[in-house]
Image (cartoon, rainbow, N blue to C red; front, top):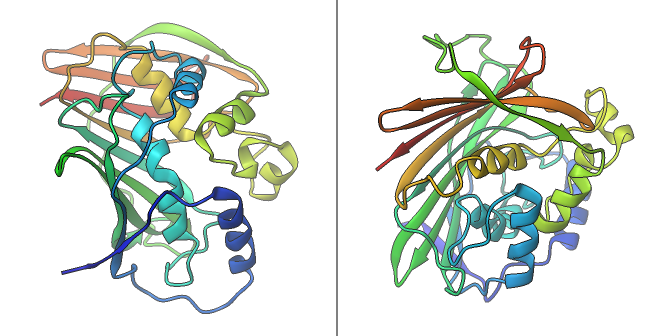
Length: 284
């Protein structure tokens, strides 16, 4: 059985960012994921912060959490593991390339859920190496929400491209055009705690190879799911691929394709030349 390290509360993020920066310069990391999980038995949900998050991501405030909000609850715990020397990748430079959320039950905003985070499935990628960070949120000992976030460490990779099959958004209609302000990264960082500098300032963004600031991938996913607010079934699965960064400030269009058991959503440039995000949503 994997060791579980229990915390009384989620850790503060500022020291973890400092630790991550220092750790970038230190050589020698293991070639395997940590052999332990981190848990927090009970987390208090801050109603004011939740309302701010809903406002930034365009969710309606309800008596249950938006389907992407538990990611925010688990983020400091995931950061605690990813900033350790036992983690195979330096935190700086990691790219969030995919995300899967399975919600079995809505999490009430008045609840005090438990949380557990671990890493798994270190494996090759065509552009480097990748692994999954898994977060589970429990209510009365039962898993109500589970997330798998896939992170890429760019470097020497397999170079093999997978067969992507048919375009799930072929023929989808543009249901909205979003104008993204230059302060979007700062506003989302304020409600999520994710203060990666590539979202906050154009200079560090250019250092990491971007032409300027880019939107948080989890904001693009949250905002896309918010377009279905009121239509999402209580139990559902959303699977996202972050295909290309979304520049801020900028404009993108939302694609929507209704299926019998769910939806396909996408974000792309206004001219349709660049696909930024693909999301498949299905009821369970």
